[in-house]
Image (cartoon, rainbow, N blue to C red):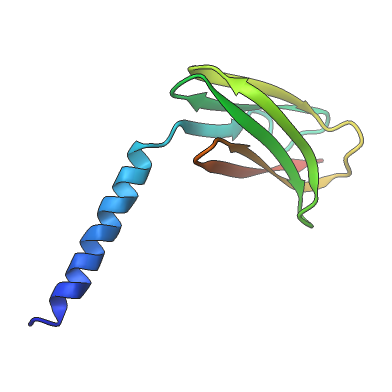
Length: 109
């Protein structure tokens, strides 16, 4: 029976860590309004406070297409993204703060 205690303790620690990480998120509800899109999409996210964030768009080969530092305000934020010269395909977009990164995918038709 004593051999179970380390496993139980590790499981409790893991659950506590995950719950704390979820509570401390400063960016939530990341999404693209038009996905897939041809010309433009609106990337939106909710910030729990005013903070500096970085918007990144990355192709499927891992090459950074766009890196843009912006100030996110408390509440919903929206960024218009026009693909201009990008080829049709799948791309990753991410919002990064000093402590976290949220990413999703969008498709250009």
